[in-house]
Image (cartoon, rainbow, N blue to C red; front, side, top):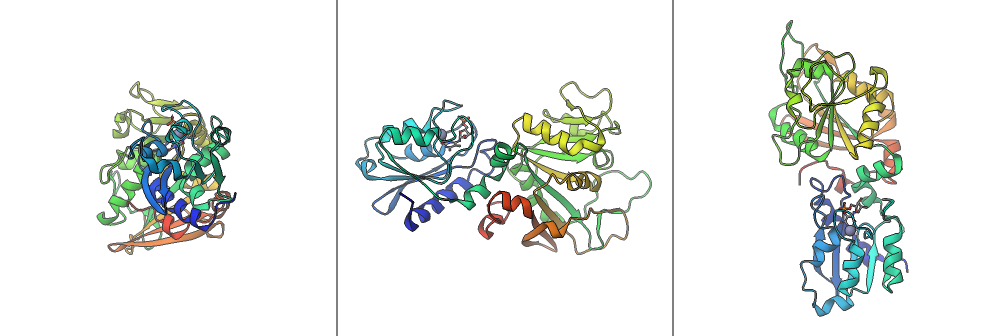
Length: 370
Ligand code: AOF
Ligand code: ZN
């Protein structure tokens, strides 16, 4: 049976639940579940943290196993329930134990350990399983997970601050070091939230030499991404602050780095694909490329990017390092959000939106803390 309009509206509620995993679920997908009885949601749950309960289990845990309503309830799950023993036991068995007779699924799970076997297991046990014909919002919500599984590369977000006259770094006097802000502090909470939402953060050697950034999450809550520095000619200092991060990684890099720093092989010309291949092999589903302009241009030139987030200042700086040119013909503008005097501008590469089967709907397009 094809799910109807009412099913679709419960699925929307399950998607809202799934969204709540945006900071904790990765590298797992964001999954939500709603149990409905007699036109009322009697349980909701989401996958909050990798290694923690899956959405179905989180929802069912809020009910007594003897709840008589379960025998005539419907479970709405945004992603096919898993049927494998991973970090947690299979959700299919938990659903079967609950006695729920019908499950509506948003989309099949492309994880090869599941990939249709969850649906088959439930049907074989006599459950009515209906799968939505398409779930564009679900694909968009899980674009990082799906990119890694379907395209064999992480989802790539480019970010650049830019002055009114087009510079990404203001003019500096000879030898001047440290981060010079283009935008005002009001935007910093947002940009740190962006760091927390992706699994890796990538910068070039120039940024490390000049700014000596920490690249961690300080002005938002959430996990630190893995910091990766592209330094093919070994220009950075072994004393740079970024190396203190336990998961610091470098392509190239100077001699005498602390032992814990992971090295990626690769030359400057193929840095973007080499970094993404490393991340894919490490199971990372996404990367935030924070600059500078040469690094951003490397990803743009390789056509290895999906989103572009501009942090625009209304102030001119009259010189410095020019911001990269984003190919507007290949992208679509999805949101403009004022933050004090500055503006965050959110673009999506057209091909990436098509691959995800939808342009981000406005309700999901805002990369803002909720
Ligand atoms: C579900 N519900 O809420 C999620 C699922 O390492 P594990 O055991 O947590 O398993 C991770 C895999 O399980 C992940 O790759 C995806 O296939 C599935 N995620 N499945 O039924 C959930 N998060
Ligand atoms: Zn599961």
